Image (cartoon, rainbow, N blue to C red; front, side):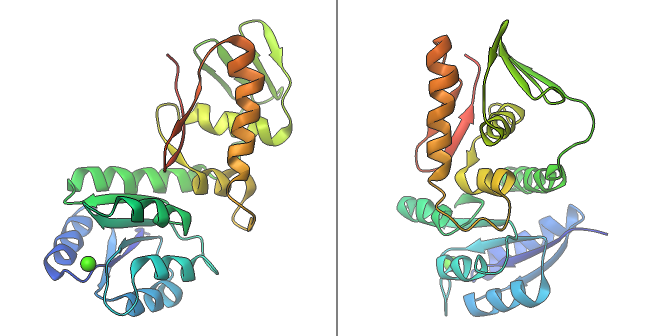
Length: 228
Ligand code: CA
């Protein structure tokens, strides 16, 4: 079955354009043109992903997002106009998974959609044995061990999972919400700032201990793992 995407966009030209492009890519697409219809379509239609414009008549995208998140973890990509930088951050705060600034290249949007769908498929813990090495850092999933060169690093279960998630997504920024979803699960309703706390611990145990910088902050967005 094809993945379904809901487009919530009041600019009809953009909505139509997205509809055509996404259909061409093989997705099932529905488009609605105001916030309230968007909210209804998300709740009743259960799409696999939502592209949600920020400035909408009736109810703005931020509010739609906030209400959707009370009951659903459907991935949401928010569309914002160029001068709405602050709103982007707020969009992520109310639970959007990603955002695009208009005007955007369709290829970039398609890449992000594919990434989100890939991410969803990865969500169950893989059963195959797995070893991930990034630079001098090696993670062994079976043995639940991380080594820097020859030295064993002691991490708690959650620290280990977070470290693994970031290493797997090397050079890809993850939002706090994405991290929460993957590590703490859909039903986590606590503060997303817990991610910051865990990142600090990883920095102390890994970056500072071995005088490297693996865990980077992307301000207003989230975190990225890099080998320099
Ligand atoms: Ca708009």
